[in-house]
Image (tube, one colour):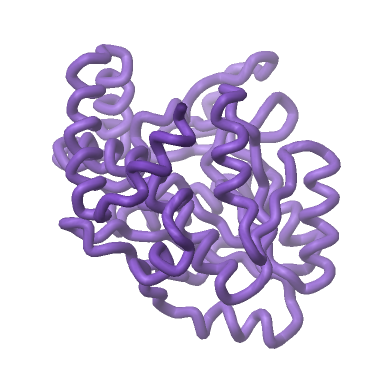
Length: 283
């Protein structure tokens, strides 16, 4: 039923879907106290409390627009996005080096992968949805031409490393909370967040460049702008130092359009089996 619903919704104009999404965002915010508390608390932690109204609406848009991005005709979806700074990417590809694209939960992050795959092959780390009913929808939508999936397992990590060594790019969501043993505590907007160490390890193992990318959602359903940004962090030091550097880069990226970050995500949760952070994690 969900697949059918998404296919039906994909027919409608993006402007209408975003309007529906904004309404959905407010409906969820007003009807779910736990959702409301987390979104408000995360915004306040980051110092973006003034963006609450926009963040509520944008969160709803992020859900409903998936019908368009996943189920719309590829050529129709592609027409609604423009790309900035692709020359930055092309220079690395021409040099034969791999790229680790880091995309936080900012704007329409599904659009970033699609736009990259229109220009070069891309392998992205994929964690299957918890609800089995969503699996065929998500996997079918993401497994498109030039877009390949690597599971969030040891086998998947090997695929990503091999891809980088061959000079091809990969994509990772660096603000996903990893499982036990796959991360370190590092500051994120002034609070310890369990942060994956994989991006820095892969970049060093594959001698690859790190580039940041996000797709800003334009107002009134006008589409998206996919922007590539240089990573200016330092990956020397310990795994915690590297994670902190990547988190700072994510903070700077989020500052570009703070209302479009997925503030309801439980970014500060403590995974099962992981010890609580030490005081130095916020230093």
